[in-house]
Length: 452
Image (cartoon, rainbow, N blue to C red; front, side, top):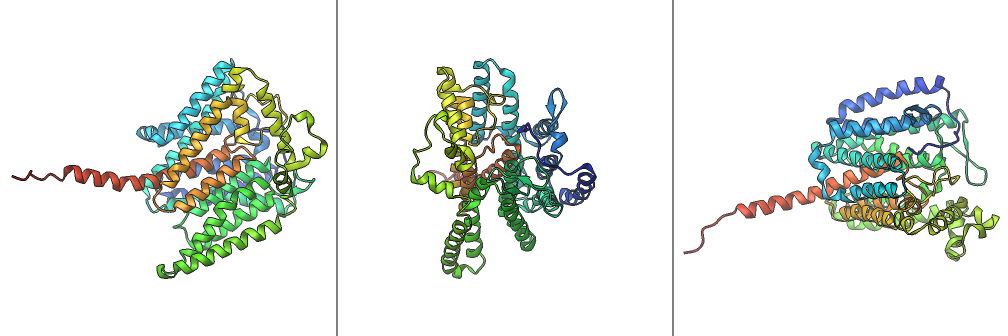
């Protein structure tokens, strides 16, 4: 899953192995303290993915039946979750229907394009997402206060530790932007690494019962890590959730009677933060202003792109155009169901860098509708959640922004992020639904004799 054809810089085993051994210590402590099987499963599943990323020179290579080490770990994680963690009844939760719809679309597209085997990887990804989401939901049911989320932050220690080592040992990676350097801890690519850091930031934002000092340090480490990774998509995507977290944190830090005033202070701080970010990142995001000034300038066939056009947004507009015009040249089947799951591999040099663009090429218009139904369903669940509604909506908005210039649904790191977010969202929504069901049950059993 999300392997690459070329490898970035990596630490040697002489560093990887001893550091991994040290990282097992906090993992073991968190495992014991997490409290439930579901919480421990999520903790280990995420930790394994992030530690495997540091071993990309070995984990991206085929090790069994043509599958890479990362693919084997993902399949094993999904299988263990389905067999031993997720309750069978929870698979019938209505909010997961769009996930099953996407799996069905993947299978239909693969069959129509005469490549049934091509659907296996995509189906496993959706199952991985569903397993993580349901495990988070079940863990929260066993731990309504959400103490396990604070321990879940330990899963992201490999990212911060290895990134710190890459800075100390001066092991940068070349950036896609102007030949600059980024610091991604010896991992393969800044996209997956940054998405994993975004997942850590999301987890930290909802670890409300964790000790304030470690939580604040963790959130700061995630934000600094995203900055060092230099992936503009992740920086922009964090905007809604970062602003919501700041505003809510300031507002709820005082007594209830003082909160209206602090809400205004929080709003002012949020506006100030956005203003500072605009000034600080003005050079990095000048391309966005260029596109906003003339949004139709880059909507054209890829052959009409000049060298200057290709430099805008790290050539994303050119990449998107290449995929969209290739899809337009297909037949009716391809227009509806695409060219098949992951059919772009081997044909294009780079992945689509946009979930909807990638989906329309692979799964056609039907696939795009399916993906939108999944996102909108989960967003609707967030809107109807009990408690932390604004935070949940902001987190979903951040995830949707992330999809506009990279592909979390292609990266297992992104599926772990969305799995946690959706599992937490479903728990909050079911927490609202439970009192309603109880009230209905009380009314239905409140029998009174008819008046004589």
